Length: 614
Image (cartoon, rainbow, N blue to C red):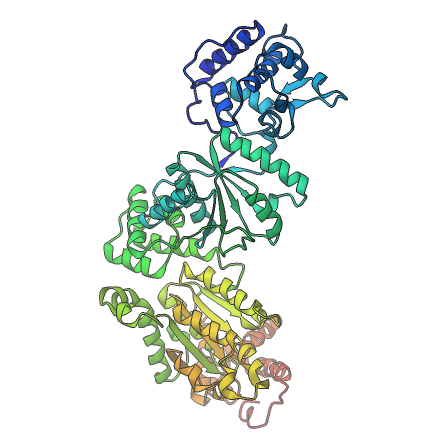
């Protein structure tokens, strides 16, 4: 993007002297009462007269107003002077709806007598006539110049050509889908096809007052002809009525840009959808971006990157530039750059957990470990099985990797998700479903859509915590078959099944779930409450090797009937107690910490749990 006012205009850049000479020649002819000498029809004056449909008389009025700016001896410009001095005079030229005043080429002093009021040539028009191009200063802060992208995927070039072609039938075209910058790049390419520039503004800048909105419309239409340029209006706010009125009032090319379709009112805006680049196009973009930065990545690694990250072209360009600024393995750097670019969209929607846990940190039965290894294989080999082996052409639907982690609190569900994210080299985002659920109809689906749309680019591991907030809400429905036919659950399952990353739900009420729901989940992993052997192993792993200990017996600590999450809490609290006393960690510290944890759980320590170590 460029700030307005910095760019030259087609046919005018570097030609200021020619336009100024042509204007002065015409002004001198009008002042002397002579006819203008024939010109080449390419001056800025000719462009203004042609673009705004000025009659020969209106052209002379414009020159009379210009003379007052350029020739100190020129008479005061008024309509009365023009009516008396020039042939072909017509009263309609002085009306507010005629070109001179409608397009604000000239301004009229507020005098009681219209014909005696002084005429002032608009400053923007004056500078245009002498060959000094810029965007009207009244639009600064509202408009942004949109640059044509360096390399646009073929699918987006076709969309741009379609958009440009539609302008010949309708000045208003609705561009939907993708992300904002992609839509802007496509629109800029379409404008180039049409031979104009592109400037953008946001719907929040459209005045709600009718008079201010009309003034902005006229000002932009004049700019659109002088520049020349199309306008893109990025719609993101709720003021659809004002935006529709503004857009429908324009008779110059407009792109209505939005992620979702915007209500167009009585007039229909032709809709042009934009999608993400195809996987082949993304590979080509990565090659171009990485080669441009002097890096090279093997084709196999490129396939893995594209299978994991579905990124917009401008994001891939930014990632390639980041790789070029770093040193190390280009393939690993490209993967990290993809992660960095993709996580930006999700940071505001969920809690990102930096994966630090490893497989050895998990204390689970072998059966559960095998299932988790299968989950990793399904994600890691997705590109080979779906694309290279052709399974996506056979299956078509349900290609997302989905899992349900069922078990009580503290049994390791979140830890397992962290281990999976670390194994796959992905971000882990924990989404609290209790914060997503809304009592208002349709809001839950909107919230879920925001999460999945934001995550789609990076294929992050999504962990929907507290899924019971969604399922438990259905307990009031009498028919258990209808419970999971609810639109919110159906929408969640549909998005999970189509999500290109790994989506995991957690619940502690698996038995209450309908079997029809479970059939739509690819993997179900039960996290059992740990037995004495598993608890002893957790105790051994939860106390770091650098911690000074004295008389700590993992076998005896395993008598505490708590899950792994509580074991970690007790171990940490006991360590703080020992550190405060400046002594090694001992059983008495664990006992004190256990009593605190049990109070939190609303439980009491039994004699069997502390037998033999107190």
